[in-house]
Amino acid sequence: MQSRKLYIGNLAFRVTQKRLREIFSPCGEIENIRLIKDRKTGRSKGFAFITFADAKGAENGLMQDGVELEGRPLRVNVALERASDQGEQQSAPDHSSRQSAARPVNERSSGRLWDWIGGILCGLLLGWLITLVI
Image (cartoon, rainbow, N blue to C red; front, side, top):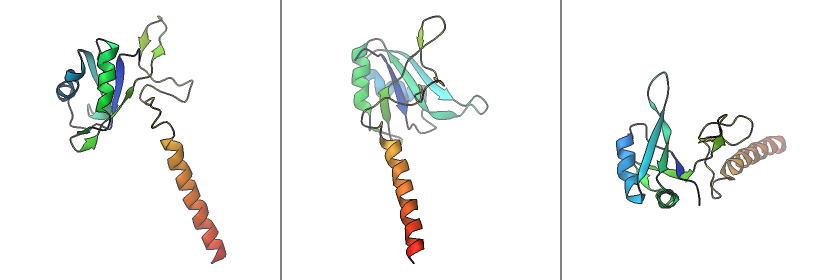
């Protein structure tokens, strides 16, 4: 793994940068923690980005996926990167594709949304068929 930046999701709104540092600093040296907050309210949006000093720290940080923090299982994935106009790398939504920085890249979770949507559609179709038969 080459990326040093991780997406941390499913955070309780009261989780702070300090608390994230306590959880992830044993994984490796942390360069930056960016807890994403609503611009109007200042309230956490429930996700953050952590940049480690090296890829090994980020790799170790991935092991925190599923660990419970304040009653919620953490979702830890490699953050998507997008080239800015200056050629630098930064995490930001990429509106030209279906992926965004806030959407994790994880082989285990990539199909979950479609599985969920398919389940709902299947349930609706089944309910509709039952009403036709009855």
